[in-house]
Length: 92
Image (cartoon, rainbow, N blue to C red):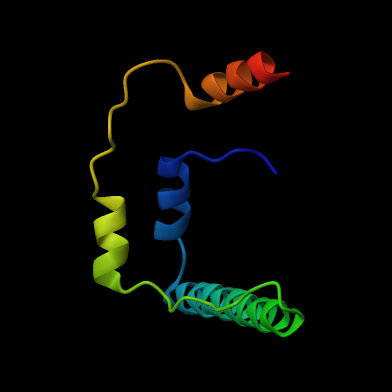
């Protein structure tokens, strides 16, 4: 499958008939529903096997928005991964 630009994708969607749009929307909703059911089943199995103690409730829209609108914290110094590597070598 070749890469498609956003503009090309928009043009393809604009060319779809109403019937095709409804079918596409239905198919996408079914995929989302299936993914949700699979995630729920995974959570149930992990709980049953004792790998999970609990499963948190789904994020609310407000919490989801707050997470995506947060301002990242700026930390001075090198990357944390590099600090960990250096620390492990020093202990090594």
